[in-house]
Image 1 (cartoon, one colour):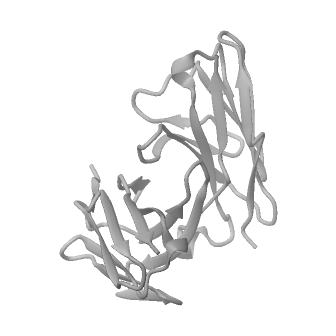
Image 2 (cartoon, rainbow over the protein chains, first blue to last red):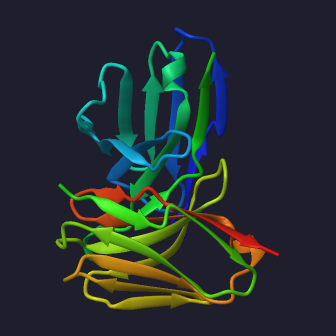
Length: 119
Length: 109
């Protein structure tokens, strides 16, 4: 149990285009999902916290108009990188917290990541 | 603000050696501490999660300990194998999950 999927697993796009990444909890409901970014040889940095049915909370330094997050259901959150540029090339990883286990465990389950390359 | 530090940044050992990876955190008000493995270009694999009320967790050749009062956690790997080569990340869960920079482990045959 506690499986999180991401789609696509990798994407290459031209500078100036928008890219949408999906994060799904497959066998549990997630009221909260998280989006992280990882640059080569660096650790994961939290970008934003996504709550079902409400606006996402962005970390300091993350442009909310550039990284649009939508959490429309208890099993799906999407991250849209708008007007992508080469510096947005990175590994994007989502995680989800199981609604029914959150109080006792606070554990996050991670997706496999999406590698974005902007040419 | 929570800060998580991992030492060493990289480690190379011969196969069969027992080894210890270190993780320290500045804010002891955490719910849990988690260790992950990440292979190059891949996502995270959760190895062990230690709740704040626990002192250690074991899974096969892996043993993780947690000392909240001193802000430290260690991951012990027994009888290391080449397949253990990867980057190991620790993460402290308070209000947010904060990751360390990782230890890149290489186990030589």
